[in-house]
Image (cartoon, rainbow, N blue to C red):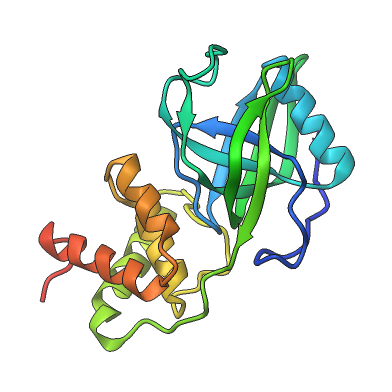
Length: 219
């Protein structure tokens, strides 16, 4: 069975965040516009999916810094205070008690105060939205990095892989930077800092410098 959730309001604060916001700590940094596949079987997250579908809302993805999401002892779990709202696009019932989710990253948010756990172990917290990246066209100095991403997309498509959700916004500095951040093998802490940057041109410039250092982009 496949269902599609109704999309929440557009990112950027057009729709208020749920308060409190249910949280899904993961060993991943989700970027706005990114795809996220999840296999859900724990009762608390099955409940989360049900609640989100009924309320037609998303949940917050935050990157774990310390501990694991199964730990219930106070102080032994730590995650980043800035995350990204995940929209549930499709749900497949793989078998009884197991769901496969296909989600997409929406607006960024910052947790306000400490998060807490419900009795069932689900994390939640109060959050405020962070403004979307302003639309900025990559400058001429970034052209090689933009073209390298276009070539990477072409090669992945030839391998019958669809790496990113369309439309491909190669004329948007934030979109290009975010997609490179998904592809690059850099530590999660570095990806987190890049995701948090308010200026998409600076984010793309840092990515460009990394690509040139690693000889992915020449010139």
